[in-house]
Length: 226
Image (cartoon, rainbow, N blue to C red; front, side):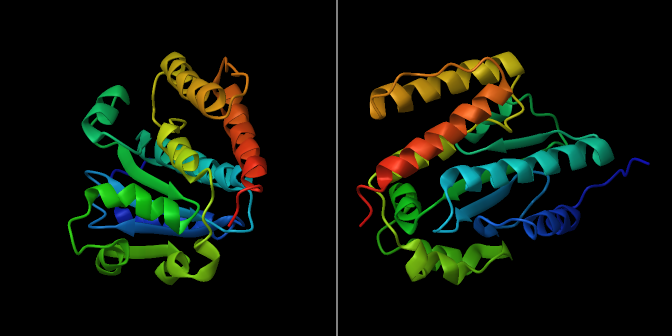
């Protein structure tokens, strides 16, 4: 039987259940009003001893589950974006009633602070903003400012690009999704890591290349961990 109304409490309960199975996600929290008719601002972070590929497999698996849940029970599409909301909604074929997440993914506090500083006024800082606006579903806000999350990596800028370039749950048309992410993969592999580019033919290939890049970055980062 199809339910007619999806509420944030229903989504939150579903997320909490799915997150309880994870091993590599440190925290999952929301910011602001969680207005399901607009979008859900979300921060997801990684446990320091987990690989980026294991972490992203869990993140992608989480949104795979949400996608199936809302499609089967509510006949809604899931859209996950990370930048440029008006453009993202247009490209994602958004229709009123779709479930939309604005997701920010960080694997170190350094990444989070660098990503946010361009939007902060004098006197503002990440911690004060999150203290006022953050609500946790998994883990605690304090974890983000603990010793284990303060690690700084040489490739932090590329890890940020990786989350920004992730369109796997964008609701793009399959052909366009492959075209877009291949361009991003080419930039990371060829121009930033001096490696041969790999070209995906479908979403399965995209995921494999995404996790390969994670593994390469983790291996290279071992030389620069401070």
